[in-house]
Image (tube, rainbow, N blue to C red; front, side):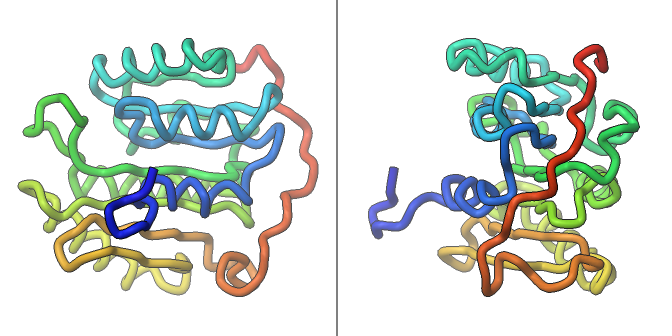
Length: 217
């Protein structure tokens, strides 16, 4: 899918940017499951030995995500969690700490759902802190922020202020927006990673790691 200007939508560009960080057996989080598009992408990329945790507070979002995964034959790779993404650390097994290859955020409201139920700056920033704490040194966090809905601009401004405070602990690899009030794609990584592997050279795969045992919930 491309836009009228010939550019892929930011969701597709986020997937393309994150894909080099993923590999069979990788661990990943969809921090905002929504209708399941990001979850399905991650589940396909991590392979049969990988694991994805998908968070959402709304049952309709998790139901839609479950249906999408079932249709793709990927449901066994994903744990669906009805909880706010700020509680990420409460739902991941200890063995996953420092091993997340990617964490995806698609902020705002559930498409087709209640537009008054939106992501909030205080919980989004708490979730970002948790994501960085659990991220692999070569992992990436993708944030797609929407500025057009009520509360969206304030959330994006809070995100920008957080980035300014957290630099150099957090490194912003990429910022992209097609217009002044359009959504913004941010790609982040841990600041203790030497160099920015998306900036000027291809990012290699992570070292092979022992997979999580299948009995971990």
